[in-house]
Length: 332
Ligand code: AMP
Ligand code: MG
Image (cartoon, rainbow, N blue to C red; front, side):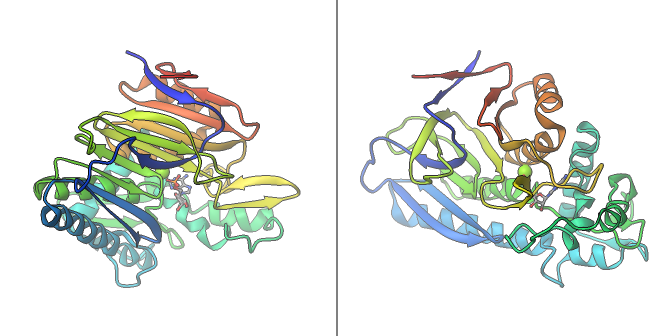
């Protein structure tokens, strides 16, 4: 069956909304976590249960942040990076498994997704501070350190070893999706049968909204973030958008996204945003980044091969392109 998305114009951001608010059912908190804006919603008639659920979700995201943060010098991830080219580092099973799954996505995407992109962090800044392109030689040198095949996992020892000095891994393209999934699991365990975790555009919804209907996800205009431009009905699943509307660099009038092509070390161009719709937010997160790198044609080819995963691409020319089973309609 085709999934329908109502589109009135170009859209990039995600918010959730429902047409009728049943009093006392919907509880909702906006909080800064993992350097991003998280919006957590719980549907429950009892306020105390709802807030316990929301707080459990927040605690879970905070816990994951401590594990995967590359900024926190005391995190296990920083330990792996500090020991690049030196020695393997023993990590928690949870982190080990996340890296293992990430490497499977690297295989699936032919290296478009690569957590070792992070050696480029020293070169590219997407906060508006870069005024000119870095020298090609410098880019090439840092890019030579990218390569997921040089992330060596030892299952028995539960260790991670970055084979080359100067290598670095980062979870920017998968961590928020993973955290959203784990927060949902915690909230469900606390009795929250319906809710939404929206991690700055990486969104998972489950159960029903306060009107006992499926959640509707509004996709907003990047220029007017408060304005919802298109709607998607989400029946237990993830809607994840990667977009360069907030973090990008401009050189000679050309827009460079904050996503690095591991083959070249340069940021990607040509695509404004990629939305992935699928049951699992972690996978959706990693795939949205991957489609940016693969580009429109190769990216769609990959998504069309994957069952139950759909994709909406908005190009730099504001063209809307969908995977085979996602239909754009003027009305639902
Ligand atoms: P997202 O917004 O989910 O597309 O993630 C973008 C973030 O992923 C960037 O800010 C980087 O931290 C990281 N990243 C950039 N390029 C890659 C890549 N090729 N593979 C994996 N992670 C990447
Ligand atoms: Mg992503």
